[in-house]
Structures are given as C-alpha cells and as structure tokens.
Image: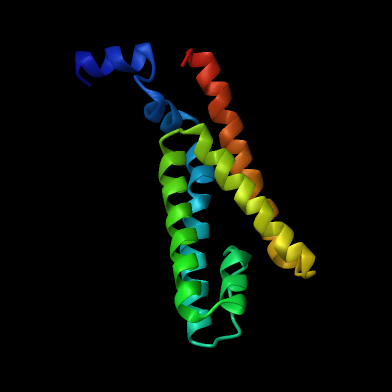
Length: 149
C-alpha cells in the first residue's frame, strides 16, 4: 500500500459512492433493481414469443401492458419500465436515496397487481427483493449518518 492509500483508508470514504460500496450488503440490495429489469426484459421477450412462461422477479406491469395494448405500445411501456429499473439500479448503486425509494414504491405497486390476481409466488419473491432493497437502503442511511455525509 502507498502512503496515500493508507491515509485514504484512515479518513474514511471520500464520497457517497465509496461509502455505499463499503457498506456490507449494500450492493446486493441495490443490484436487485437490475435483476428486476433483466427478468422483465426476458418476460417481455417470452410474451412476444407467445410463451406461457414468465419469471416471478419480473414486473407484472409489463405483463399487463401486453394484455391491454397493441404490441408496439406494449413494447414502449416495456422499454420505459426496463430502462427505468436499470437507471434506478445504477443510481441506487451510487447511493442515491431517491432511487431506492422510487424503485421500492413501484415494486410494491407491482406486487399489489400480483396480489389482485391471487398470484402468490411472485408476491413472495417481490417481498424477498423488497427486504434486500430496504435493508440496503437502511444500512446506507446508517452509514451516511455515522460518516457525517
């Protein structure tokens, strides 16, 4: 290690992103948004191929879009949701509180759609994902408070 590396490690994280990445369990929780985006994109592709299969981590909103709108409009909604969750995941990994809050609120709404239709396995998976997301958010808030950021 160099002297500057040792000095940096003694004074703590220089910014919010460094603090976030140093917080145990944080990245695991923040990356759930990318899993949601990825599986939602796969679900959209499966829907286009007229498959009856879908992944429970993905969004019910994309499934509803394909049921309610013509393919072109549904694909636009898919792109907005998948892109939105990808962006939220990116900003969450940078330690942005708004990203966690927005992503969690949308994912809770999505879980409510599954509840409305009595599809309980996705509700359970959504609850698990939300547990990790909220835990990561709370651990980052505690780390920010202790670091004075």
